[in-house]
Image 1 (spheres, rainbow, N blue to C red):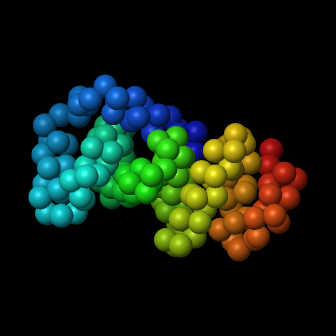
Image 2: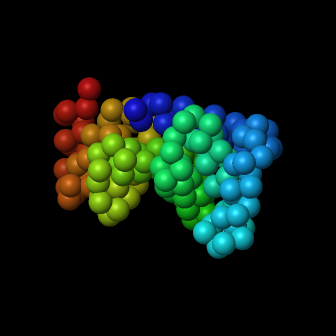
Amino acid sequence: MLKRLLGLMGAAEAGRKAARTEAGVGTHRALRAMVRRGVIDQSRANDFGVVYTYAINEGMDEEKAYALSDAYADSVAQGRSNAYAIVYAAAYGIACFIIGASEGWARAYAQACAHAIAARESIEFASTYGHAIANGASPEDALAFARRYAV
């Protein structure tokens, strides 16, 4: 699932570089309405909108698309690279909607996964490392655990 979400996020990044997407008028209206209502900041609207549009086009429901897009846009707004933001958002979405984790656990898992991928580790390693960190392991213990048990 992480690989599928990463593929989705990669497609969203490519779409952002190509400017407007082919989402249709309805999705763009929904995004403009979110900006007007103050649900998302105007400064984050482009980053949020591209990921949201691709998620909706891929069949994701609006709640999940919103959470994924919000995680991506927040990460970019914090000055993280687009690659980091993509992995963070994908891992956050998995933690929230597949694992059913709490907000704090999901953020810790996503951050650990993104750091591991940024260090050029495998997706399996990142996921194992993320689980260990989110469950309270020290970075050193999580690293040893992931090195031993990641497939």
